[in-house]
Amino acid sequence: MIANFFKKSKPAGVILIISLLFIYFFFATFYIYTTNISVKLLANRLFLFCLYVLWLLVFNFIISKNKLTLDNLYGLLIGVIFLGTFYESLFSTNLLLSNIFLLLAFRKIYSLSSNLNTKIKLFDAAFWIGIASLIYFWSFLFFVLIYVGIILYKKVSIRNFFIPIIGFIMPVFLYFTYCLYLNELPGFYQKFNFNFNLDFNNYSVVKYLLPIILFGFILIWSIIRVTPNIILINNRLKQTWILLLNHLIVSLVVVGLAMVKNGSEVLFLIFPTAIILGNFIPKLKSKLLRNVLLFMFLALSISVYLL
Picture 1: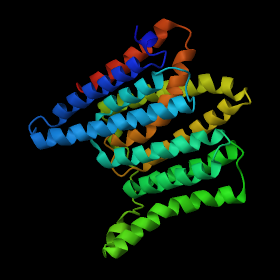
Picture 2: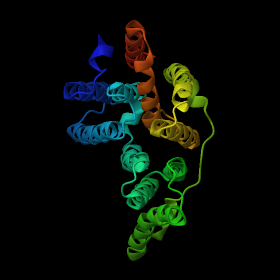
Picture 3: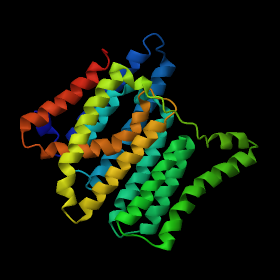
Picture 4: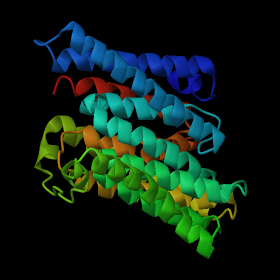
């Protein structure tokens, strides 16, 4: 069954997940652009799909390198199903680019658990978040995770406190210099737009409401089920899990503040949600329940096209 196939991390599973992403991408393209298909549009979508494959590979690398889940592909699979369910996220170039740079930052933040090159990791993480913030402003809120990681992994020092600030300012300063040289400072100031939208009426539409309820219920169930077992263990996994829960909170804030609420903003939720569920599914003792849960997610990702 499907749960058995993805219970081990192997190249065949990754290829199948990329194929699933392509199927979602293909159907979403023709579903949204039924009357405006052109060669230019298809070329653009092909390029965007390649970016998503890059995003997926970086995602998988972070999970495996930092052992964020057990040796399985559940997290990666759920991440792609999440994309397919909220298919508007497949066509938001700015959000995707911002998330790619954020993934590069998360890679550094979660690797703070080791004692190697701590200062370089802090600078790099802040640098990537700085770039992501220039693309999508509210991405800067993930800067908080750096300091959460510093505290959890016991890297507290005056130098480590200031290094992320310098790293974050660096790309912002470089972009300011670029705009100043081209006499385009208004474009620089427009990047720092504090506008937000707290109107959640769009989520009352069935195609959004149903997935939010289902994913939300399973996510809360996962946190309640997994957290007590991990908290009792005083090791790196405990620290990483607490960091992951903080990551989820920041992601929820970013989604909540998003000006446009059309489903694309949930891209920021995929990383923590997929990893939490990826740790929960293997803990289900019943193979039948694991398969039912995954099939239910897949069925939901298909049903949104009919709602």
